[in-house]
Length: 532
Ligand code: F6P
Image (cartoon, rainbow, N blue to C red):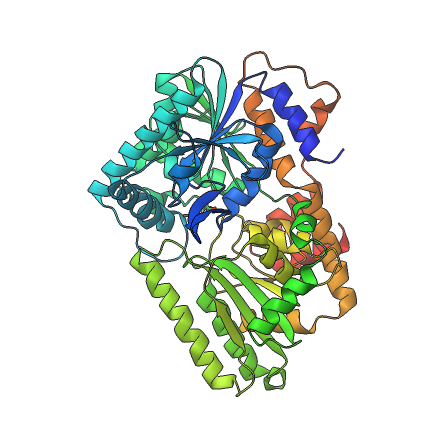
């Protein structure tokens, strides 16, 4: 039986045994802001909120998050609560208010200037600032208070998201040992040589071992985490069960590759997507030329300059392509208070201008950089219209743009050019896999996207769609809830579904995984295409 919203609803009801579900994530799923004299709401850019909102809509409960919109306070009650989705509420968003100093030290500082570069293999030096660290600690305490408030008076399962809250699980367990606490780390985990240079490495690890369950996207990330714990802390590691025992408390550490809700593609596309695309094409002088699209937050992990250099190199190698296509980069502004992010925006603008000057003509510009927030309706319309989607991250835990693109291609066309250094590459070996640090390989991947025969596109896209349909966000959440449900007292029996919760690993997936781990991408692709 496949995973659907209804099945997840059922699993949540039974495995949580009546415990309240509380999700904690820094980013809120809906942001209210002032516009045209009134209030409007938008969905933020970024994979986490896109992935978790359908889960919360299926399970119900409370989402605790930083209230970051300029009209957020006006939209909610005195305790910071508002029903969401705003147009048809079915769960509660509890907003936590942070001062500018909190945001600087916790979000821009420790989370995004220390942990973000520390966890990604991108050669950006992490900043170790004691003041920022103190603010991060204080903000984790602020969130702990809000969660304890929401959990008061009954059993609850707290599902903590990401690197903003490494200290939160320990704080929660210390205050309420009966809470079931799980954390999903949405970004990669580095090896011990890298991680243990952090002055607060032990505090971070100890905080996370307050969890009953820690999830990562890949087994590789789990292994790196266990290696760091082993070297830094007094504890016992059971490598058979993938569990750490510290101070008498067990933490299970397992991979759960995150995904998307494939059904959302049809909702976002609607029947009028061709009109939306026509509008975007007209506004940006794209004519009816083939499009390659990139959709990212403007972040130095995403490899945006690398893909632009790939476009440049492709045009040098294949001048016959001039005038036949556009590369459209949708780049949502992100973390712009951090100098590295501002510098990146300037670099992308300069590269785009340089490529357009070198190869463009009076009526054709190869690169179009749309440096603003776009709603999912426009983004899915672009996915559907494009000849190819380019995901060239230098390092990425999963990358949900890759999976979103696949779900938008109900026509079984379009080529995904995908970095080998994303978690998604392990699940989508039918993409054209490239090393974004290698400009020749990137250029050849882009060329393949523009020239691949329709039958080959269809063969690859069918398999990728089958993979994402099956390994969807409901399966991800169902697996996590089932694992953590083992810690819930008196869950209801799961009846006929029990043996589907922990399926035997697919031997083909395992083979592909092994080949990818050894860097043998061609064999992995061959195995996948041979249906081994
Ligand atoms: O996956 C990492 C992450 O921080 C997610 O939490 C989020 O979806 C995305 O990056 C966007 O980042 P931010 O919330 O900082 O805009």
